[in-house]
Amino acid sequence: MNTIAVFLIALVAFEHVYFLILEMFLWTTPRGIKAFGLKSKAHAEDTKILAANQGLYNGFLAVGLLLSLFDSDLKMAVFLLICITVAGVYGAYTTKKIKLLYIQAVPAILALAAILI
Image 1 (cartoon, rainbow, N blue to C red):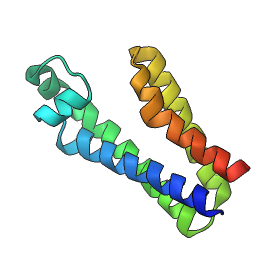
Image 2 (image 1 turned 120 degrees about the vertical axis):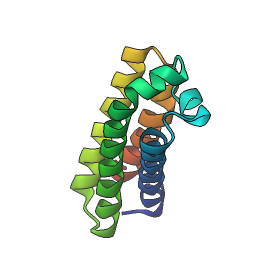
Image 3 (image 1 turned 180 degrees about the horizontal axis):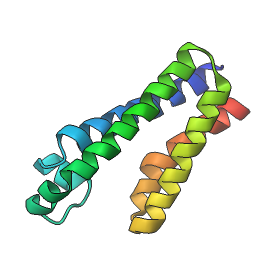
């Protein structure tokens, strides 16, 4: 794997660690509420279990990407980056928040490009 691909995969992995932290531990804080554009603290409290579940999945993605780096497993990295790209595109489309596309999908697409080129 080339250096740029390794850097971009690591960046996407650390992004997902950050998402895990936001969703599992900071969801009901002002930072979490602002990051996800939640309606209110009450709404955040009502949805914190769902958010924690999302955070756990983001953690699994991060660990998978990091393992793909340690094992030099291109197939695993490509699969996870495609999953992340699809999730980012779907999230941006369904929430009508284009920011999701740039935060989640674009880094994964760049990492995929770095692997495949």
